[in-house]
Image (cartoon, rainbow, N blue to C red; front, side, top):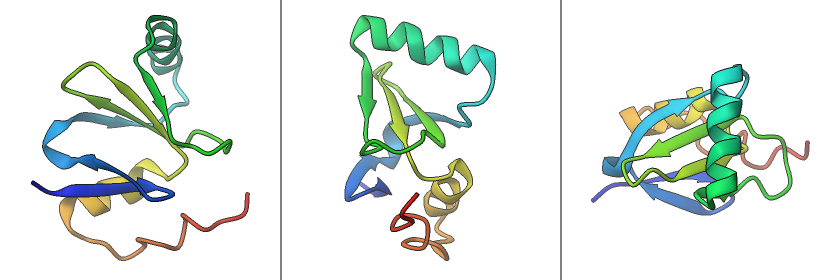
Length: 90
């Protein structure tokens, strides 16, 4: 089983990821709000801005402070920027 770093030492099993999306659109904001009300949100942003929303096959919604593109690169094996965005102070 392959695990992907989604920021600040947090990992998710790559086989459990269904979708990896940007949090900017209204439908995704509604999805996150509905999941939050149902207790299905896992927030691993450490108080930072949400830059990626990961939807899993167990209907959990994971909020990450790492760009969706960076996580996508890690999923595909192109781990060029593995640590560069993670330690960004803002």
